[in-house]
Amino acid sequence: MSMRPIRVLFLVAALYDGILGIAFLIAAPSLFEWVGITPPNHFGYVHFPAALLIVFALMFLAIARNPVANLSFVPYGILLKVSYCAVAFFHWFAAGIPFIWKPFAIADLVFLALFFWAYSVLKKQALETVSSA
Image (cartoon, rainbow, N blue to C red; front, top):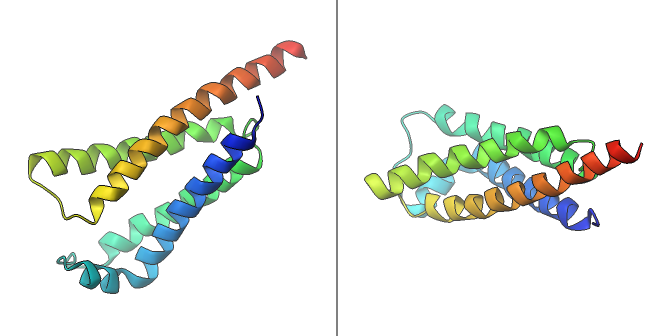
């Protein structure tokens, strides 16, 4: 199988998480005001996860650059998406969350499914490469 769809997937994931991370890192107060929700009592609660999103974006770029060689990074991307989805969907259904977080939860659910698919393809590719050597 061609690696192009997997490279594109992780490039899109890098852009998505990188742009979100940068936006919440440099413009969190404006974003909270723009969507009309009360910000946390300290923006450090927003800046740290924003910085983590930038770190994950860099990891997704590494995967996009060489998917088979960076197969071991994919489970961390899966865990990132599981973490956000678990928290967001739990709070969404238990007590409700502001609308701003809902599209991110849905997008991360899609990324989660696609990351599982990519992992299975890459693992198979890696095994074929090892067995043919």
